[in-house]
Image 1 (cartoon, rainbow, N blue to C red):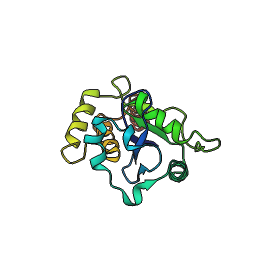
Image 2 (cartoon, one colour; image 1 turned 45 degrees about the horizontal axis):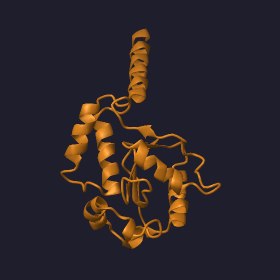
Image 3 (tube, rainbow, N blue to C red; image 1 turned 180 degrees about the vertical axis):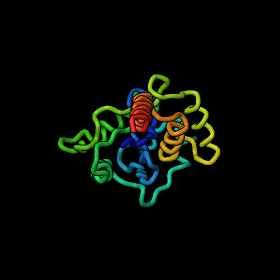
Length: 184
């Protein structure tokens, strides 16, 4: 199962610090959202994040420490009881945050793939449609809110017809069904 995720962090500099993370399952039925209490200081936050990210933080039940996040997110991922792969539109910025969350020994969920699916022109069936659908999604969603960004990527992935490997698997399954029906 694919899990779409996005992170928001303090800056696009040398040492970005995690502010929030949002994830949504491929079927859209399960979400996870967290904001960090102990991963950054206000002084670490760049101008962009101050203007675009911090005003959208929700607080309340979403607030947790990094160790709580590792435990809760790990349990959430394990609850799928099947292999899961994370999907992101930014390998360089989002994936290191996952590695940071699960950096402590024995915290990487056993069912979590060690590599994400990168939502790029090289892997999607229709990248242009992906981009269009993501932009359309932001008519109703908040840009630079990690959960809403993950939701937008999920909607883009659906509109694009999924990834190339999935498209190949679907085409082979359809051809097999047609062949089976013809042989009957």
